Length: 264
Image (cartoon, rainbow, N blue to C red; front, side, top):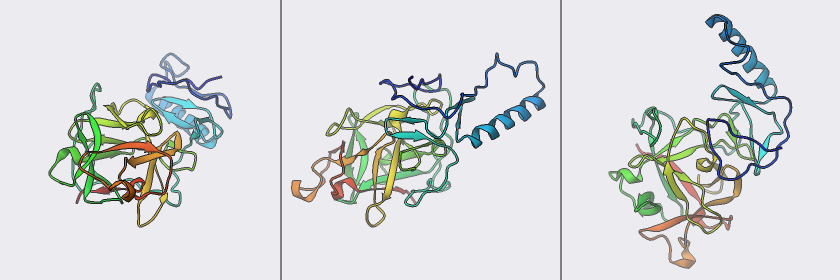
């Protein structure tokens, strides 16, 4: 049996088999909730949510899935948003207010602060978008291509196999999200971001602290592939203007240790 995605998202590859803790419960416009008053609907939905929470399930756009054992490609769907040691919490609201319209969607992202993304190999360079690629460039807070939205909307319901919450990184200037690469050594990609649909290929997590507040940034469904400033380590000459961001296995390099820091 394969995990099937509903209308809220899409997959490019077949999902890994999963084991459900019980039958899925779904809310449907044509289901048993028809012909009920709004008050009755609210009560019934509330009861279903309680049952889902007790089973460790999650709620997505009106649908409920599986249980605690539900896994995909090394990650799992959990619920509850429990803070885990080493978890980098959501960036607090209020530093700066930005509206980004994800291409292809009918609704803008709510106002959120923007963040700077940089690696320990050279904090004077920030992650940016140039010619459709994710690169490092000399840090310039006035450059909107270096401003990112850390969208945490799925953080309470989707976590990696270590329990760290998922987020998307959306560029302020382009409205595009960073997408998983094709594999190790391949550059990360950019795709139009639609905040209304769940797409695991644009979801990432941060690891525990790997030194001085820096963390690995890795795929939500494969925590063994991390952001890597290609050849940005001291043995290859360090970070340069235009250094590509790729995915690579953990090699303990400073070019794999990242901070996602609010612009003040």
